[in-house]
Image (tube, rainbow, N blue to C red; front, side, top):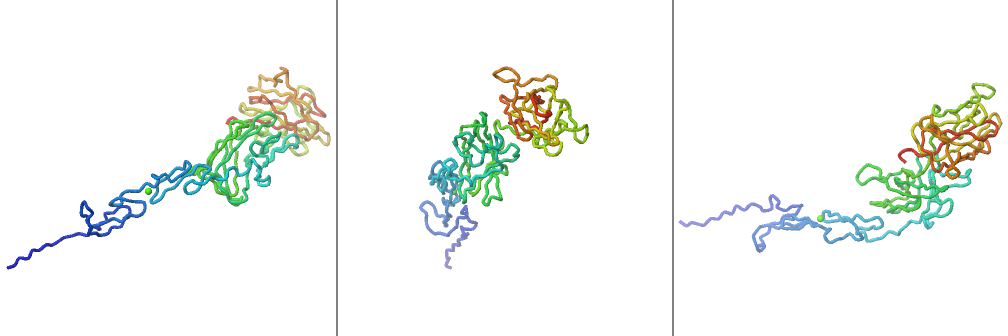
Length: 402
Ligand SMILES: [Ca+2]
């Protein structure tokens, strides 16, 4: 008998299961690699290397991001997070620099705002287009109106642009520093639908830090940049920016306003000039407080309920059936307990300060209280008047968090 050597190779397919990682494609190969016979070769997709494609190539190793860009390694790719003023795949392009608020390339018509502050009987207007960096002059910034509860200023760039940052600056008014301590930013392509700039990967509005004084510019950069046609700034917290405490708006309620005496026209109850009516710009037949007596012992008191920084007072007169009446000058007293009162003094002369009041029945007369008063109760003490002692008032101040 002839014995035939019989070799039976039980040779499993080396590509099943696939020994290649990361979607490497396995090919059967007879090639002797030099060290060992493995019977297959892994063909690696881009971004991976190694016998079994087990090695994720770090594309950031060759520093593809220029100008301080931060590289993130991806599958067969990388991404660069560019610092504010750079752009492009590798942060290789520098943006064109300021868009022209300071230099005036952005025209006045492109800058709008929720409101405009008017001072000096409306003669001095703090228009939005004054909101230019390093602007000089008496009126050198935009200021929102005092009753503007949700102020904003907006720039229409006229086409979609990449906005990488903002520089803000405060200003001085009547010698007092005013600036925005923090703000939010919104942007839009059509001026109608707005998106608020969010904290990265959170559903939380980004609060940008603004200025710390009235002069030093403060820069914020957008990472990632905003790409939009319209950009809006919403001031959040302001420094030394007094706002109305709520005589006109009604935030200060009637019971918080009291007075020494009350006048009734021809002794009729329906024409009672009570203190709750002492509100700036109040309308109607009976639209102010009038004292029951015309002497220098009268007062109008506002209880702000908590000690408050009071920085100014606006007064206005009124007409009683055609008769003009107003307070021509007044003193101011303040207290925290309603018992001990201090009359506001002129710092230099060391005597009671007499504030100039009104000269007609309608014009607002604003007095800045500098240094401010910190108190819960404020009294206006009429010192001279025309007709009867008649007042419509707004108190300007800053709430605690400011
Ligand atoms: Ca990679």
